[in-house]
Length: 115
Image (cartoon, rainbow, N blue to C red):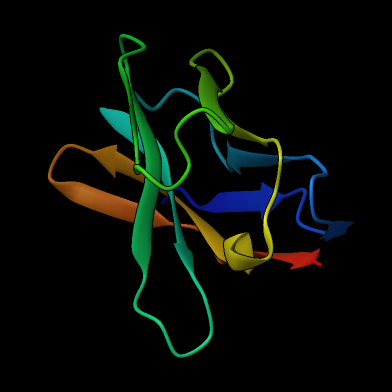
């Protein structure tokens, strides 16, 4: 069974940048897509960005132009570069990978943006 491990969450001031990483515990899986969701306190989990195996990307309107998703297929790792962070980007960020008909979720990493 494969698991996902996120890293890179931190406390940052508004306008700053962070880079999140998400690595699969085992290599050799051909994930159909990989992506990021986030959940702020008392809010539902929401979509942030996704990238297909071929590199096609999709973003939530709230992060377009500020966030960039990329992946290393050989390492089964996905990244989220977050620039010009805003206080309302504060949330736990979760990585998700689609393997066949199954979604694999990470445990989350906390991003806090201070004003």
